[in-house]
Amino acid sequence: MTETQIDALNDWSVLTDFTDAQRAALAYTDAMTREVHVSDGVFDVLRLHFNQQERVELSATIAGYNFVSRFLEALAVDPEAAHAQTRQRPA
View 1: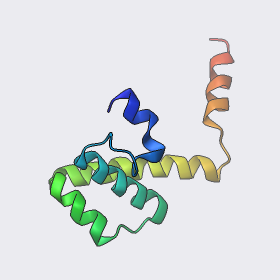
View 2 (view 1 turned 180 degrees about the vertical axis):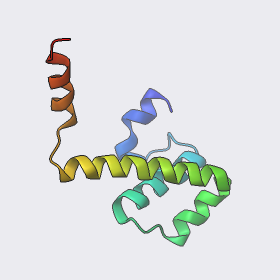
View 3 (view 1 turned 90 degrees about the vertical axis):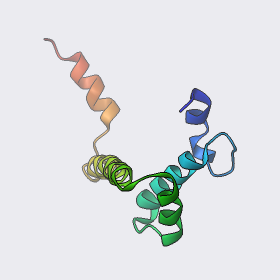
């Protein structure tokens, strides 16, 4: 992805800066993250752009990031504060 695309991720569905494959992956990411259940329509479009192995790898990556964010949120962990605290410890 380009820097412009990264900056536009919040509005990916209304901007034209993304390829059809990127749009399919982003729609799938949003569905897995926001609704958990992925509709047939979203998955059908994903199938047009990614083979079975790529879909599994994409699913695992999305699930991994969702796991981390939900884990940290449940424990009220602020990753930025934890990182800053780790950097301040003497070696």
